[in-house]
Amino acid sequence: MAQDALPPARRDLAATLRAAAAGTFPAVDGGYSRALPWREGVEAALAFTGHAVLAVGEDVTDERLRDLGVHGFGGAHDPRTTLALAGEGEIGILDVLLAGRGTGPPSALVERPDLAQSARARHADHWRDDVVVLGLPQRSQTSLATLGRGIGGLPEIGLEAEDGSADALLEGLLRRLPAGEVVLASVTPGNARSLRFFLRHGFAPIASVQQWRPERDLSR
Image 1 (cartoon, rainbow, N blue to C red):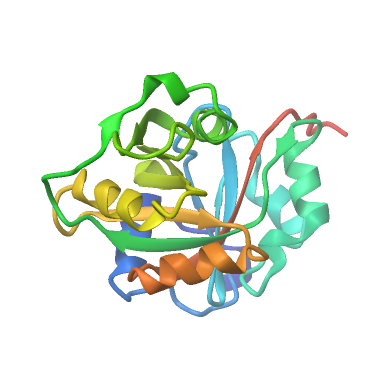
Image 2 (image 1 turned 180 degrees about the vertical axis):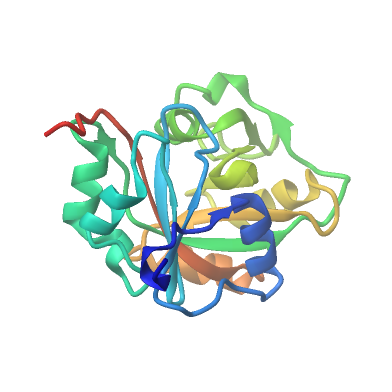
């Protein structure tokens, strides 16, 4: 069998992300790997340097991905590929994926179920599992943080703070996790302020990611 006809490897996405957070990335081979979706009804394409990972359902064949031109040099994020795989389903924003580390307890954050219907919290709950909405008790009634199981099943966080509490919220989030545990944050590339914030706090970009909720008909 020719090398380019070999089926792509199936990756453990959580292990791949943890390795990337530690500085070990997939080989720069221009190719792609497959991974199982980590949440029912959600799929994604992740692009590392020179390699992509497609977390898509078993109904998407390797031949289909090759026909769509998926490759590791940006081809995984071709809008036409995303549209073909999502079909009529919802498509999320293309984000920078950053990785940081938990620092261990104690955390000053408290659970804030009263903010569970805020736009930020509903967005987190839409794409992630086991989302907890948190906040600082002495701060405003609108600033919040979310912590859930996100991309690859790893901890993923989100922040909304307009009262100067972002630093304290992030510190509290990281203290909710065991010291050294990998935690992810997804940031829209154009949100330079947020990117600078996470970089300043030791997060490092490891990939780009786009998620969707597929509603496709592959017979077309």
